[in-house]
Image (cartoon, rainbow, N blue to C red; front, side, top):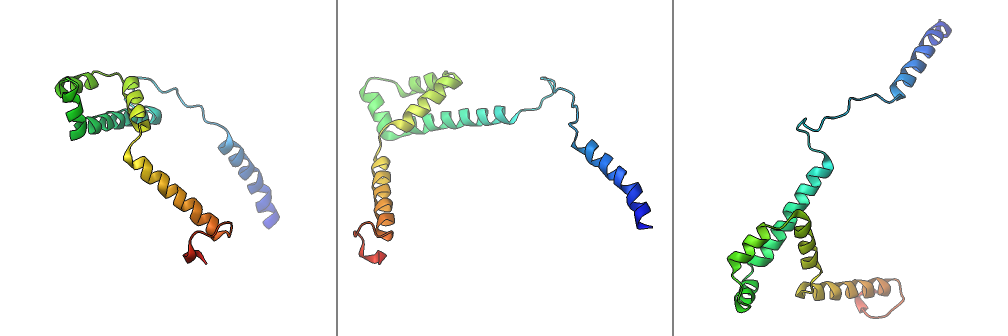
Length: 132
């Protein structure tokens, strides 16, 4: 009885597995379908974050004071930032991230602390007495 069942089910299961593993030919997505790809959504989000970062920096009081000291109208700067292309905004935001700031000193000190702590725990240095 079981052999007959296996004899009938085996080809059916094999056929189901083969058909299930074949790629399905999907219709190509039309460009006017209203769907947004993941890459487009991420790019749009990144551009928005870049522009927000630029506006955050320009909104700081010390930056506003420096602009006025240089003879530049802050409203004119905002208008020019709004007129930037997406690539220009991304480049400007990247340059803002690379500029030195006080936070980078704190980050460097923290990195040195962690490196010394790890080497002290491993027994390579003898800096912190609380690691013993």
